[in-house]
Image (cartoon, rainbow, N blue to C red):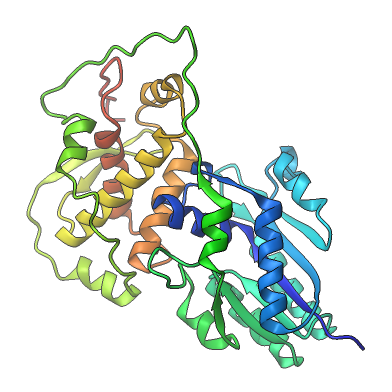
Length: 346
């Protein structure tokens, strides 16, 4: 019986990690991807690494179309040769559902049936560890194929998953840099009117914030959950509570401003990165529309800030106090709307 290798791609992980390498934030809408070329280059890499021909690429993602159907890009990806499109669904809150379960079930089932001798898993999710062990129990070698960060390290890969896999390799950074590019800013509408802004003395302008931020500061190393927890536990409160607003309900909550200085710095870096990347991809009209909806932060932006903060901290869950700090800083960095609004506490 002929031997094969196979690739199992968690698309959410791959694209968010590639976007982080290219733009500094995991916002998928901030990059343009040459999918065919990216996938073909990954196939070439694993065939050379394993010395085996490819059986198939399994591409796992949440359906971007109505009712969980594939969107236009996913439809094109699904038509590529030797590629199987495996879709979960997107929840009303914008979270992927069923994707990890599909990957885990396929790893276990395909391992049991020995459909391939070497499986390259493109993911960093600790929840897949048991499925990896199940496949290994049937004689299949499971290698992690991680996306590289800007420092050439595996991006956002669980240490437990790395420990149980048969090895960890990096996608060639040249592949990411060649086929994943920052999305250019859309051309302004010809009849678009300039925005009228209302300056508030208590809120610094985005330009002032940008001028005061050390943009060339290297991204700090990812922290373990214990280290991040210690940062929160061993600090002394240094400022009073403040009122902040939920990104989804608009309800007021009392946020404690006493985050440790290192966490405050990470919050600032994450928010600046997300806002700068997003603003580079939208029109002035879209920017005004988001400002006019304050305090409701678009779900993709809110989710991206949480994901980026989680990656920086090395923790799966971001605590509520840090979430509130991210959302408050978002509006500070984005700047005031054309009609400065202060929502009433509910």
